Image 1 (cartoon, one colour):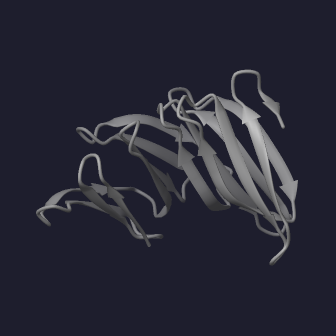
Image 2 (tube, rainbow, N blue to C red):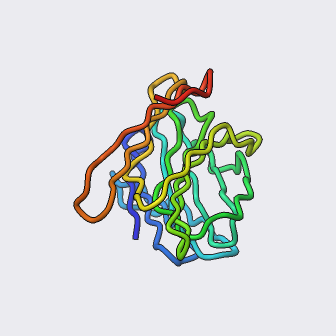
Length: 169
């Protein structure tokens, strides 16, 4: 299960993995603000306090991005490659979402940076036999950092992606 405290709006967001409902509470009063119901089980959720967005990845391949001010649907992205989604992150400006998937049986990890408004794939990074441990963006959302761990207890590697030039370091 995922639980996120949204300090800026004082929300506690409960998202049970494989459930189809996200419960949102005002954590200062404990009162339920609303439920978001989905037509497929949830795989992962992510919140950007800066952009005031919450994203939900559903098992049917939909990624739904909601505005946290009024809970309106900002974007729906179809991403059919959700096999095992192990990481998802929204950029501080709300322009990008980073997604890392492990393809079971193939030994391949794929990380993609997508534009939230269009679903356009800005960057794809693939690796064999490694786990993505995190995807983070700088405050201006011009750079992304992808952290990897190789093997069980193996080494770590970080890739820095310049989202303006699409170069990687």
